[in-house]
Length: 242
Image (cartoon, rainbow, N blue to C red; front, top):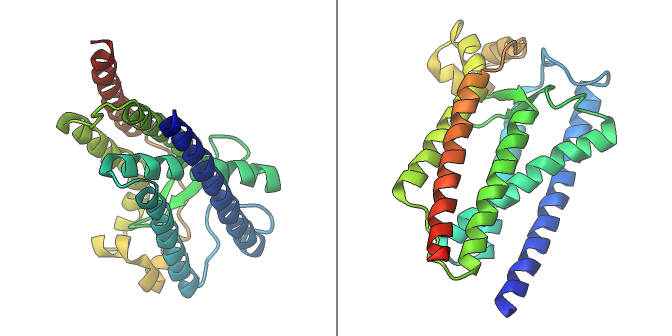
C-alpha cells in the first residue's frame, strides 16, 4: 500500500514538473514568434541571426538534459528511469502544444506544420506526429511502471528493445528526410548537420517549405512501437495470470 501511494505521489509531482516545464518552453517560443513572426508563424522561415540559432541548439540540449535528470532522480533502476524519462518527455511535449493553443491560438489544427527539433538536424512535421509519439510513450511508461510496482521483473526483452530502437530511427527519418533532401541538393552531407556555422547554408535552409509528410514511413515506425508495447504487455499479462 505504501509503495502504491509513493508511486502515485511521484506521478503527480513529475506530471506537474513536466507541465510547468512545458509552460516555460511555450513562453520562450511565444516570445521568439512575437519578435520574428508578429503576423503568425509559417514557412518559409524568417532569417535568424547565427548566434541565436546556436543559442536555440543549446536550449534544446538543456531541455533534454533536464528531462533526462528527472528520470535519473525518480528511480535507481535503469528501466524505471527510462520509463520516467519518456513519461516526462511526453507530458511536456503534449502540454507545450496545449499552452501554445491556449495563449496564441496556434496550431490551427493538428495537421499544422511545425519545426519539431534541431538536433542533430532540423525535424519538421505536422503537430499530430509528435502528439501521437508522446501518447505512445506515455502508454509504454505507464505499463512499465505498473508492472514494476506490482513486483514483476518487468524488463523489455531484446526483441522489444530492437523494435523500439528501429521504430525511433524510422520516425526520425520521417521527420527529417524532406529537409535532408532539400539541403543536400545544394550542400554537402556535413552541412546538413552543421548549418548553424555556415551562413550560406543557413540562408538556404530558411527558404525551406515542407510540402509532404511521409506518413508511410511514420506509420511504419509507429507500427514497430506498438508491436513492442503489445509484445511486452502480452508477456506481462500472461505472467500475471499464471
